[in-house]
Image 1 (spheres, rainbow over the protein chains, first blue to last red):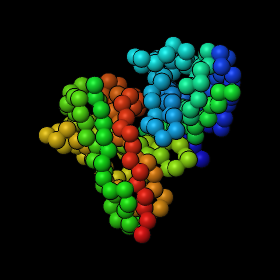
Image 2 (spheres, each protein chain N blue to C red):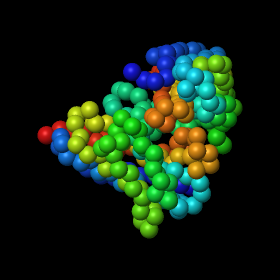
Image 3 (tube, one colour):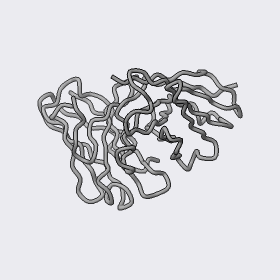
Image 4 (tube, chains in turn purple, red):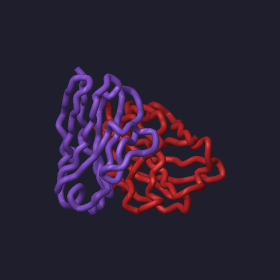
Length: 111
Length: 124
């Protein structure tokens, strides 16, 4: 069982917007603004999409945005494209000895 | 641009030690404020952080694996390595090495450059 809770799957049609949630506790998501999101296509390595809750690394499309409210972080993808179909993982710094925790992943299907 | 490549045996026997090396190319492992990390992913499952090392030799480990894990760095070869002892079938996974931005901020556990991953199977 993952430390951060994500929905197993979400779906949307091209052009639409979707949001993936990531729920933790006050020891991780709620207590720190050190949340990140990764995109992983099948058979590929993860790619950093968001860090510090809502910052995008250079080269990441501005269709990807992040936010946080309380113990829940969210990733929003606007103007959904076929290439966005992938697994998405959230991650957060944690004050526990684990240092960092991941969510179980969300499979995004573009209909 | 920096690239990472994992290498090592794809098959390890139970109770033995898994050893992997990550070779960094396109830049010096000692330049910049980076940690160097290992992450694994069992087939069909999520990501698990194993640990990381700074070029000074300072390490952080996942406590669930700490008793079995050693991460080391060889700056002369631009490589860092993972050793996981007493492996079982539960250690079967794709193992990734990655660059970690933790040198910029201790709370950063952000992996911005990843290797392609290598599959390690634990079986007799």
